[in-house]
Amino acid sequence: MCEGNSSTEEDLRRLLNEWDPIGVSDLVQDEYDCLLAPLLRRLGAGSSKEKIGDFLRHELEEHFGLDPRGLEPEAMAARLIAWWAPAAPDDRSCPG
Image (cartoon, rainbow, N blue to C red):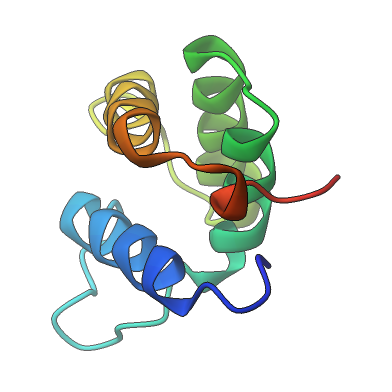
């Protein structure tokens, strides 16, 4: 993860919990933490909405065992890019 940038991680965690594709964020706040580092790396590297959407779709299917239809991974990817873009100073980017 991005070292020393816990507010960025917390903001991303909040966005993922708002999306909540499994429907458990009321009970488990860290359910999607496995997505934090990969998403921060992709956002920091300037990945496209399509690439981030593909990653989310893959994780929904392969990691969480969900059917991504109706969960709108592409819409979530667009939301993540919009969140990242306005406030993406150099110290927010992640290596890798």
